[in-house]
Length: 306
Image (cartoon, rainbow, N blue to C red; front, side):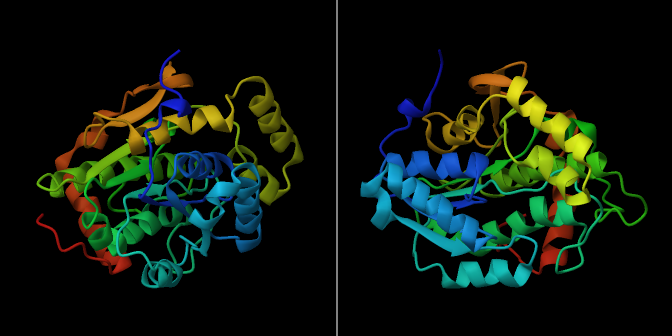
């Protein structure tokens, strides 16, 4: 049967920040960490949807009410990322779950002018992690888990065109942003090798969430939206199952730095297991170049050895 949410160790006394916790994988991740006793901060762009998610968790787990908090975070706006980090009252963060993301959207830009998928999926989380790093390192056994995708195999990053200014294909841009997630994890693990922090990555396989339909709905492409909804019903595993690799990477014993966890069966579904990753996601050169560009673009520096 493999590892399930019942195998999550007791998380009492630990604080977790989960981005995009208003729905899908993020909501499941937040709920299961709260179930095991963690204090959970739901970091959400849409406060109304975030409030509904918190209510849903507290309705199922009344004892988690005092330990479950909603805070606004828009990863597409660096001012919001900085405000979130500044206003977070915790002196210590044990787990940062970089879960939020957008997928295959029409071309758009963030509040800071970055291509939307690269800006939200990578740069927002890069900045957030850096701004919370001191509090992560204040924890005895901290972890940073960044949610990537098997779709990273669609494309390596283009360091000369990180914001897709020369050309834009939505799925290629999505693949590049998910490659960036893995390169970020690779470099974070390398830079913090002499600390207790474990930087790991995970992916859900094919899980039924609103990511699949968001782009089509935004453009009013009803036929594509219906096809995606049908795929979610007939092929995808549930969000509960899709969140297991993230929960495993965040809590299981023996998780290695720079590991990549996904579903066991062909990377699509099943219990968490080590996942294949494209060779370019293990490139020290590419990771260092992306890191340097990310610091320049976000203005967030980590203050750790290169």
